[in-house]
Image 1 (cartoon, one colour):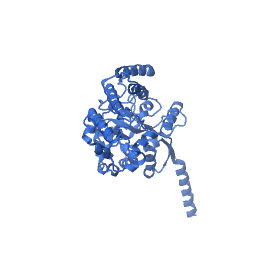
Image 2: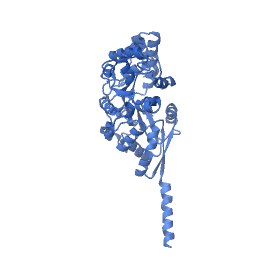
Image 3: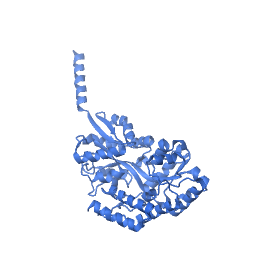
Image 4: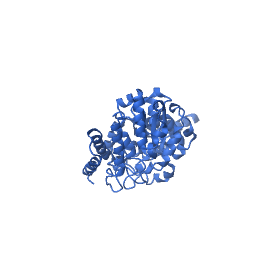
Length: 412
C-alpha cells in the first residue's frame, strides 16, 4: 500500500512537472545559432523547467521573416536574434518589449556591458529594445607574408590613410595582390570612425541626414583614391569571388569586425593558418563593425522564460566565454572581456595575442546611436559612391544627391 501511494505521488509530481514546463523558441541565424545551441545544457541546469528550441534561417531569410512576424504579429518567437544592420529598424518597430522597464529593468546592467553597444539597442524614445550579446570591434587584418614580400611594415598600414594607400601601391607592384577587396570597405570604416557619443552614422538625434558632412567627404575621397591607384579588387564582400580572393592570395588586407578572424580560420582561408595578423585600424580610427542582439516580441506569452534565457546568453560570463571560443564572437560583457582567455595566443594568427588589441578597441569605440532608416541611407550612399568610383561623379555632388534622396525616402 505504501509503495502504491509513493508511486501515485511520483506520477502526480511528474505529470505536474511536465505540465508546468515552459517551452520557448529562439529565432536565430548562423553563426549566432551555434552559440545559442551550445548554451542550452548550461541553461537547463539553472532552469530545468524551461525547454528551449532554437530555430535558424539564413541571415537574410531570418531578418525578412522577423520583419514580417513583427508586422503581422504571427509566427513570433519568444526570443528574437537581431543583427546590428537591422537593430535600428527593429527597435523602432514598436513590436518589441522595452527591456528598460519592469520587470526587466535592463538598464541596471549598463555598467556591465561595453558602453557603445547598449545604446545601439535603444529606440529614439529611449526604449531598450534589445540586449547585445556580442560586439564587433573594428580591426585591420593583413597577410604578413605578402606584406613582408613587398617590404611593407604594420606601421605603414596603420599610420594614416595616406600611408595605407601608399603601402597598397607597394604591395600591388611587388606581389600583384590587391591591398583590399573593395574600396567601399574604406568608406564603411571611415564613416563609422571616432564618432562622438550619441552621434549616429547617418542621422543626427533629430533625424537629419549627415551624409554630406566632412566625415563622408573624407570617406569618399579615400575610397576614390584607392580605386584610382588600382589597389582594390572591386570584389564585393560575402561573394564567392571574395572568398576565392582570400584562398588565392589575392587580398592582402581586410578591415572588418574582430569576428572576421573566425571566418578566415573556419571557411574563408583555413589553409592560411599562421599567415594572417591583426592590427588596429589606420589613422587612429576606432569603430564598431556589427554585433548581435536579443529581443523579446511584445506578443509572446513566455516573457519571463525568454528574459531568463537572454540574461543567461548576455550576462553570464562563462556562457559569453563559451560563445567566444565556439564562434569567435567577441563578448559584450566586460567581465568576459577581462577573462584570461583574452590573453591566450591565437594559433591562426601566428600566435598573436590579438584579442588584447580588440579589447582596447572595444573600450575606445564611441556610444553612437542607430536609426530605423540607417539601411535606407546605406543603400543610397553606396549607390552614389558607385557613381563616384565608376563614373567619376563629383564627390560633393554625389553626397548632396544622396542627402536629397534620403530626405525624400524617409519623409521626415
